[in-house]
Image 1 (spheres, rainbow, N blue to C red):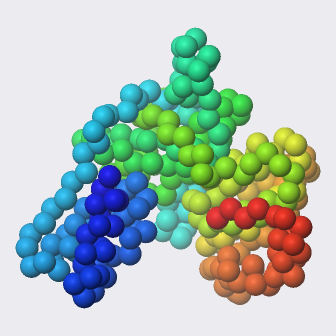
Image 2: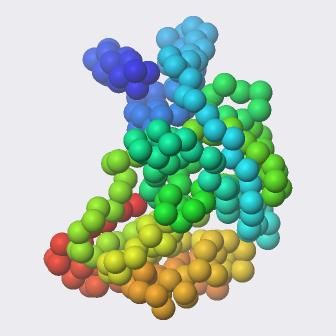
Image 3: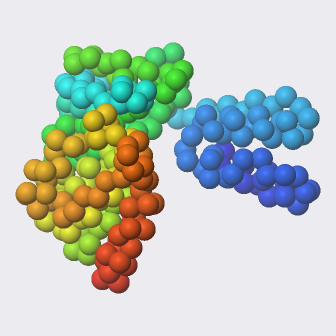
Length: 271
């Protein structure tokens, strides 16, 4: 609802000749924080003090997730990040029958985590599906980040409150056309989940950007096995801090002929 409101205001502002406040896609991402920032920018344009706060109409029912393991990266490049793995919570018979809650989920779905001292959940993409037997996310610690600071501070045995949110618009589908996955940093999370779940050996080409392979090569330990098992066809990496700095768009251009060939063969692209 707040995204619809923001779009109406932006349209009216454009008709009045005001400069663009913030791109609409910054608030159309289920982010109450971006909505609040947009509201402050709107208030400045109007010359008034304006604080907008999105309050969910109905709070989602949460489960308690227990951390079972963590892997840490990024300290060498001042970007501390952790791959956090939680145990599956106990689900009722009704949930098993209906697929509600954590009884059924796929990589690319979201979990909403409620940090301490806040009623506003933060959403993280899942790097695992229910068939994997665990819940996994990739979290970078942000300076002053309430939820990321709490999550990256967890130790095995600690718990958080979270709920599952389906994300049907971000799924690879079940056909056999080649899949091109493009991501950088923590964006690798759901993409790694797609590769892990590729039991049918669908052709998957993954383009992944990192700062340095010694600091933040997330899932670097798993990729060789996934390739050997046929879950991953090809991995192309871009390293932004090295003798020859490259970003994902650079390696995509360098591989343009192969990418074009895959697209001609009906490849699906997910970013």
